[in-house]
Amino acid sequence: MAKILHKRLKIITFAAEMSEERCFQAFLFRFFTGFHCFFASKLSTIMFRNIEIERFRGIDHSRIDGLKLVNLFFGKNNCGKSSLLDSIFLISGLSNPKLPLNVNILRNYRRLDKSDLLLDFYALDTSRPILIKAQNEEMRELSISLLETSNSKINLLSEENNVATTDAESDYGLSMQWKINGTSYASDIILSRKSETELEQKVRLDARYNERLSCRYLTSKFDFYTSIEGLVNVMQNKDEKFIVDALKVIEPNLNDFVLWQNEVLVDVGYEKRIPINMMGDGARKILSILTTIYECKQGVVLIDEISNGFHHSVMKDLWKCIVSAAEKNQVQIYATTHDIDSIRGLRDAMLEFEGPKDAVAFFKLQKTKACELKSYHYSLGSVDYSLNQEIELR
Image (tube, rainbow, N blue to C red; front, side, top):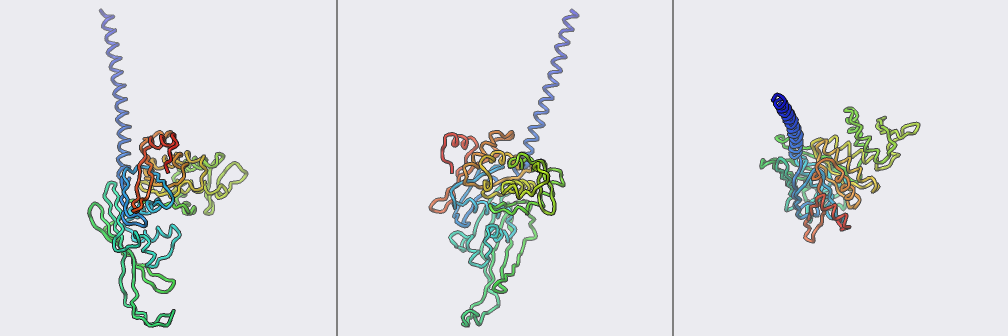
């Protein structure tokens, strides 16, 4: 009888130990899934889920739904990829009336005459404002209109042809009207011609609003040296390892890098460090992309023509670095390409990605004859199937 009781006691003790282990496993499961849900919830507050555009540049209308952490847009030349990135840039900094001018400067178009401001309006028609809407934790609505006001100057004698005129010169600019969750704000910029070569800018901001969302834009003609300041912050925080790992995509022999007199010097196993410029555009572009993501925590990063400067063989590892950096820093990525290797590289990177597979979205863009920008959303699975079946995606 005593043996039976002892045996039953051992079974009860074993069951109790198993119960404790299962409870501990359940605790770990709830803890980590809860942490993942917390991360996803926090990330979802800054991520745009959709964007709608009306009458901007060559786009009469477009609406894109299903935006994710990393979004890759592809399509034919002049279908509206860059204009889409420009519109995301504008809605991300909707309180700054200088942004429409700065976007054109990023594309090396620096003229600021009144006729140049018309170029942002669909069909050059300023009677209807540009409208951009986007939604994350809040609903953002932006309206951009042309401003024109006559001033008191009267040009009585034209220097060009000695003809007297009573035409009044006019100041001009842009008016930004926007709403955040229905609350209205306004700002504007006025340009006044002081001479043939001089323009005076007057900016009026709405003091009630303080922009919390950070957005950085890397155009296809990026300026590498703008990344130096961000790289200093990376090194101060001792986070340079992820930069080194990314640069090894281009140069496997790279050991480290240092900053010296505003130059990046890399150790690739030679007797002396060499300037990163000697490694070509690819290495500098990786550095620019990753430091920009690092500097834009809980924000938005736009990358135009992401494959420029890269060989097709490095695209998978490049995308791995970008997706990992975006997830770590809670940054939403919007990138454009017309290159099938960029699409294939992101597909390959995500198939090996240990995180959630639905963190990326692929969008094919097509412009109709009516100038509507259509978007066709591809999941990772549908892109994988199309590539395997050699179905043309672009």
